Amino acid sequence: MHDCIVIGGGAAGLGAALYAARFSLDTILIAPDMGGTGNIAHKVDNWIGDPGITGIDLMQKFIKHVKEYKVPMINETVTKIEKTSEGFKVTTNKSEYAGKTVIYSTGMKHRKLGIPGEDELQGKGVSYCYTCDAHFFKDKVVGVVGGGDSAGLGTLLLSTIAKKVYVLYRGDRIRAEPIITKEVYELENENVKVMHNINVTEVLGEKTITGVKLDNGEELALGGLFIEIGANPINELVKELNVELDERGFIKVDKTMTTNVDGFYAAGDITNNSTLKQFITSASEGSVAAQTIYKYLRGKK
Image 1 (cartoon, rainbow, N blue to C red):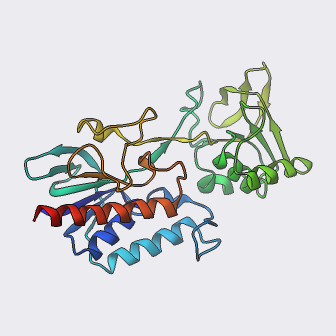
Image 2: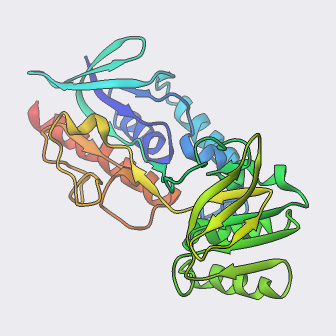
């Protein structure tokens, strides 16, 4: 039986695994892919000490560091977590593992609009990841749905690649970080147009996207659509454990990353600990969770 099973291979999971190993805890890390959504981040300008590093390069540094501590990294998908008398049984698509404690750090998944044509044209012009797909849309006219940081950053990147970028936002003014918002509106003099108080009601096209319908009755011709409206916490597995969630579905934790279930901890974007969903906060939460487990297990002994 392992001291700690870390579920999730992003910044939080890797940070947790590193610190758990440094505390000499018998630890394994389980995730379908190491690096998580960090692997698709185009540019990370807020990781202190590495300005401008790409997400995948930063994650490779994380992975290399964790490997130096000989933490087993298991590329499997967790399908079930059960509470046992000694701790937890974690079932994956390939095997079962037993642990005294668990750090759950699965992060979030992209939200969808839920409109006609969206699913049918996903991967055929409809994208949820501007960092992954922007380069496919060179010199095309594209749309970005949303008004937060993700939509703002996507607009800035696409403005350097696409012929024209329409920002389609339901509010009166986009609400990204002030510096991002300022840059987006400054680009309206060039190849960006922000359309306020508008909703996309349908994605048009058959083999590929040709445009979108808007709730003002107009149709907008597009060669690509980036849906950047946030993400939902990946919390399905913890519901069976009766882990307490907040009203948005994020796992409730205290400042030590402890949940309401004994021996079960959470870290990173999946928690309600912070609204700042960044690599630096995720890695920090993972390290705090590992220290809490060290103290928890030492107290049991």
